[in-house]
Amino acid sequence: MTALTIEQSLENVYASLQNGNEDIDIHIQHLKTAMLATGQARVAVDPARLMQNNRQGRKMMQSYFKKRGVIVTFSGNE
Image 1 (tube, one colour):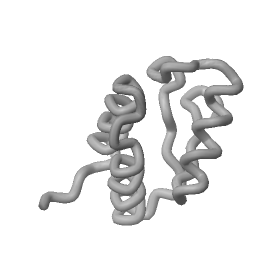
Image 2 (cartoon, helix red, strand yellow):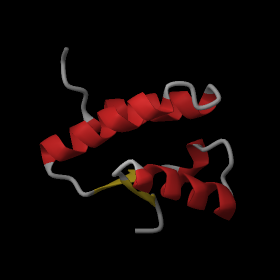
Image 3 (cartoon, one colour):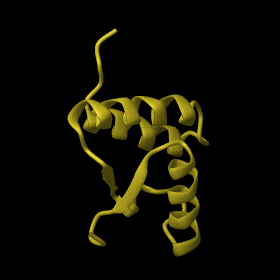
């Protein structure tokens, strides 16, 4: 299996979010693996691509990803 890049993994996460969180945990794990391979500590997510782009939705996403070892920031808030 070829290792995915951070960008590819993040696209898969966006697709999963659009499909009712289908396989989200698998895509988060791939994203985490890609981040570890590059030494990146956090990933910037485009809030416009979220299903629920409000404060509550963003905080819920940050919490869910943090529990799985991925620190999420939102583009424009860095």
